[in-house]
Image 1 (cartoon, rainbow, N blue to C red):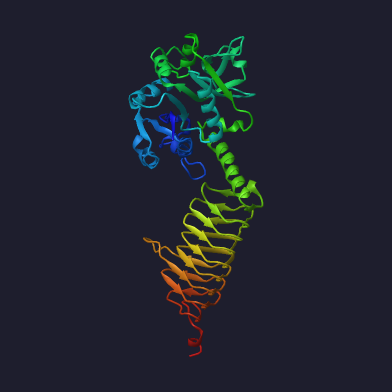
Image 2: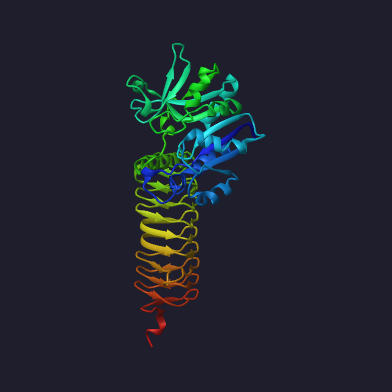
Amino acid sequence: MNKNFVGIILAAGEGTRMKSAIPKVLHPLCARPMLAYVLDLAKKLKLSKTLVVVGNKKELLKGLLDEYQAKAVYQAERLGTADALKRAQGALRGSSGNILVLYGDQPLLQAKTLKELMQKHLASCASATILTVSMEDPLGYGRIVRDNYARVTAIIEDKDATNEQKNIKEVNTGIICFKKNDLFKAIAKIRPDNAKREYYLTDAIKIMAEGGLRIESLSIVGDMEQAQGINSRQDLAQAQKIMRLRILDNLMASGVSIIDPQSTHIDYDCKIGQDSIIYPFTVIEKDVIIGKFCRIGPFCHLRPGTRIEDRAIIGNFTEVVRSRIGKETLMKHFSYMGDAAVGRNVNIGCGVVTANFDGKNKLKTVINDSAFIGADTILRAPVKIGRKAVTGAGSVITREVKAGEVVAGVPARPLNKFAQ
């Protein structure tokens, strides 16, 4: 555990530009709330404590915060970032001497960057250490103001910057390490003398600098997109693209072939075995596990609860949800498996569908090893297909098919009965 730092995540913003009824930080990024990525960072950094400043609809965040054992601090009114930190002061009594300020809408940050920032803060004995980045178009970001000796003297918010200050390319990412005591002494002096009439946390930097305290900075070099915040649906879409490519890169580094990353969508935390191949225009949602040497796609949709075992082939225009597909099973085209348990070495023909919903409940289909399900078969759940059983093309299965039995028709019957 890193006993030197407490993490405070600011997550009380209403996100008005999102035009949403849910808190901004709960909007999904690759099927996961963006706040979860920030909580993951705090966990990886092994902070001594993590506080999350929340606002209205705080009850919607409770489950996620409980999962990470993070303590919520309520900010009743949105009076600014300095006020948000002030709300957390009481929860910090007896805690470590440094604070790492994070934001719930910055899910792209990397743990490596934050570790470097924290290390520099401790090594320099600074009162504040700011994570900065240089941008060609810094519109909307607070500018880093330095003196003739390149020392940081202030952070000026975009709306309050002069024309000369707006030409500064180095900007504040919002991520700052503080000495706890120095921070709260500075916060006590902050006034809402700005365009938004809010208590800006960034004003603490000027107050500290004027008091002769040491201000340090660390600039992000390369991978500047990690500093990107999310304030709108457009920002969310851009972050989704970045996170999706990170996920795909990690999978390829682990031994998975992805033929066309630009047309492939895989959610966070899906597991895919080595030497599996994912073909273009495939969507793999959360809670999907794929084994080794599998072939998935193109134009395939794997939904939550799907388990694909080794050497299975799930081909084009197929959909699987809440189902297990056994080893070496083939489902090559135009088929749907929902709420199914499919054994190994099964052939699922073109156009096969499990009719798994009766209007009220999702019902189970079981297909045992080495069964052959003919083209355009409809399996009306709940139903069971025995080992090495065969269904004829176009069959509608409404009852159990025993092991080795061959059935066909609407509804399907054993073939020897058709001769009677």
